[in-house]
Image 1 (cartoon, rainbow, N blue to C red):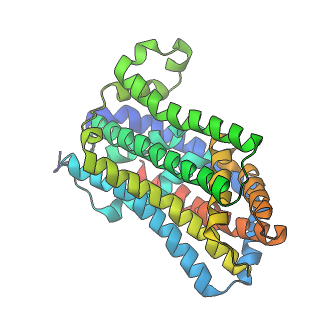
Image 2: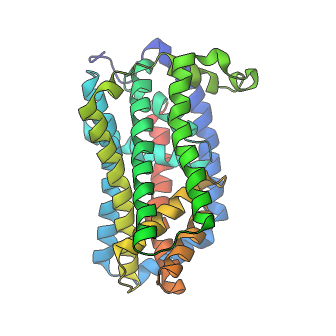
Length: 330
């Protein structure tokens, strides 16, 4: 396994590679449409950057680069545990490409999962090992997301006294989703794909994904140190994104407490996660701006800061993500 050539993957990977090649073309087309249809938002972002101080822009870029290192760190530690070490540097581009795959269409992460399996397969990692890594990443990502949401509701209750009906509904829907996704993956692994509806089993690639989960080892989830490390790495991504929003507010000249910024970002992220819109377009911006406004930030500054945040977290990685996805697959 360790000596396997990069361009000569194990035969069992070939169906995944064929599916991923077709699917990547669809995602690239979807990404191109999103770029074209939201060009005005890109223009607004560029206009804001022209008036920003370089030091803040460099800090925001550094924070976002660190998020990709954190995500790649989970895969790096997992591969080392499985006896398939790869350099952290080689995995960072996969993190950017997977972000694009996940966001190009609302699929509950299936699009990014299919891409990552094929990309790791091209590096010589066998499908069962890929699925073991994905199980660990899925469980710890949503675990970190749930912990961040609990911190958010505490901040809203203790510091802002801003708990109301719609927030309770949002948190309830999100918690159901955040528990249901990893629980569903573990359920598929335990009970097998025979229980899946025949219609789902006919979807190209999806059938292989479900059946791959059945054979996924769970040894990684039995390693407490690895699970804690993965939780911390995924949790650091939320912290870094909140810090990027703080930097965006400095760009527009607003000094705001992290206790206000954190709920705004997390509420917007949760709405984007459970919503049907690709990239959370519109829903993320509206939630973030309105929450910042309620918590004391002028609406104009909140909108400008949100556009800067989205520029660094979404639009700037979009083009390299499209290119890196094509490079990672045949």
